[in-house]
Image (tube, rainbow, N blue to C red):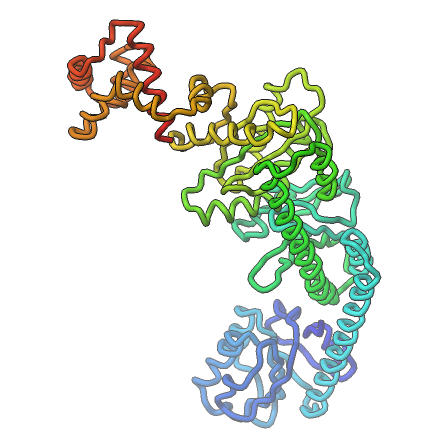
Length: 539
């Protein structure tokens, strides 16, 4: 970078003096302008150094008073003035303005040649641009060379760190580590601080990243988004330890993110293709198109899936209302691999023992388990960890099948897990974890093939109540179900339904008029079964 301070150290400028605006000596010079007309402002370049004798405005008091302020507003680097012929000295008000705006005023010697000085700066800038172009080409060539050699992401990052003379970390779009030139065992990323930093939500002096015993704050970190078109694949992070890369660091990062975007886009495309094949494979399993257990175990190895039995199926359901929003959320979850990580953590099994796929607008999780003495407890813990780890993507619920011992039971295990969501999903607005084993009567209802018989049973015990609700809309069915749930406790039912005690008493009388005897225990068992059966048929 060519700054005013550095320019003053060069031979042609050794006799130039700074009379005001010393706070701006670090300003970068990117171009040169010469003032030949009074209204120079439309023609100056940002970060340019303006050379002038002030001839165009020396006799215009108002123009002189506005001169420094307007140059500062145009974000010039400074102004170099040759005094004598038109203006003997710089007015005090210009000096005060220069100090206020940190805008350097340089005074040229009386014998200074403006053409010689401006050409010298232009030559310096051209040499620098040529040097930067050569450096950019060199960096691009070296980085491309690594890719052409077939280097993977970790090797590419190591080479990049060597070029930048600084540690490099690559994160995915969810701020998870893709690769790092440092030892991952000693690398700690404070997710909250990093999230705020990359989203520019707030600035902090807190530690963002730790490597071994060294800490890095916002000011120590350079973050560059890795993008292709409008899609963001992740972030390139440089931990600035020294100035070995100098002003060339920006060029190294610029070239690196182009190639990283290519690498990550290619990886994403391959993963998507693999997911499509896996989804098709799982669909065939769930549709019972495989008859041989050994055949699907062998085919699963193609997808790096260590499938064996016993197996448990989890159905992870996003509670987003819109279908498009749910699909987008599932895509992010699949990319993050947080479900697989949660399973591996709780069951201490390899990630290859778990496979997650999108199916029927839900995520289906297959977990191949060894002998587990605390299976129910661990499944509960695992599901809780999944919900917690996916919190950044929204609210989720998990339903859990019974243990699956053989291939022929996979389809029923999957439908059992889905049945849980069918029952509880419409009732709950909060995350939940439910086991198929906890469904009670619903497990029996699904075994009844003759649905007509079920309708006859419902009609016999609560048919009149259903018909009355259809005509009068008094919520008698809800009232009856809540009374049964609360063992006939009127006060508790009134509070749960948010209705007045007297209103509930009126509804209870209407239930009695329609044939429900709340005091007959045997009859109430049958009425309760009919209510549950009605609910099951209307899922």
